[in-house]
Image (cartoon, rainbow, N blue to C red; front, side):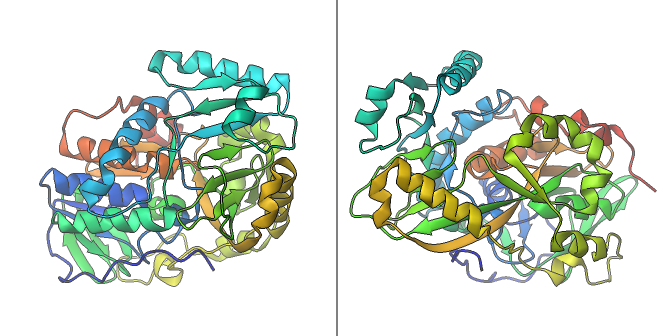
Length: 440
């Protein structure tokens, strides 16, 4: 089972018959979109098939970082950090956000050179990252037993609590007038004259002029039902939490083969950095050439496996009508098995690097399915082939940290306001699929 997530109360009002915007998906991107739309005074209804934040938005590491981002994501990451600073006030609840800093350690001089190259690309954005030598790293995070060659350090980067953040944001959206409905799967989009005119949910129909699909790992399946090919695959991220430590580092640290960050409960969230498991599915073969360049670059960190998910997705319905029960109702929450081997290895590596963690045993494990695009950059965009449809998905493991920025950017695009950052890097039509008409 996944980690315990803060639950929001059921909606105090019935499903509306009409709204301006329907947001599909109650992860951090969907909840943030609803919050910023409501803050603009736009009528918005958020529909979540299960519970708010119950899938990958509550199962990630909880890092909020600019450091190491793709240059296309740096402006959005910086904007998101600024939004996180004000998010507790805007939402009226605690997201667990703390600016404590993040460190990436370096085992070799080659690692240091790699981060020097990233710093050169990030210099235009005034990112306050800097390289540390071995002595400076020891002073910042004392007690290391591994002879690190240095580190990349960003003091302004932060952390937050994944099990609290999306529910807090959704409650904030509701307080500002958004309708937030859980256990309410959207089955399909209805169109008229070639544009969005509404959605059909399991609880009834909603008229609207705009839809934001923020369905995470479900977005490709949802799009496929009405002939839109959204190129995204799933990888599995395994995470654990430790028992509390009497004292330990406040900042988050990523090594070559471990990662940790402090939690509000005094324990640590840990993971095996540099190792991703991707269970093969039929979509891996359908999208083989789309993902081939990335696979060639990242093959050392990627473990492809054939398991039960291939059978699950092979048998899963790909097309349905609005009056039929959908896969979203059959599986309310994706809850994959965590990799015990990877998490045990992560803990061993962490204890070997910082022996103080021997007093913090693993007490809980979970996993989540991460939606990944061919270039590992999200789609936050209108869909030209279907006016009124917008997509905020494919966050490729970066969605928690940039979730508020993604929600604000999407709200700006839907409202026709000046966007908080340049949306060009996140356009759907950067992929060949985004330039095709809807399939018949």
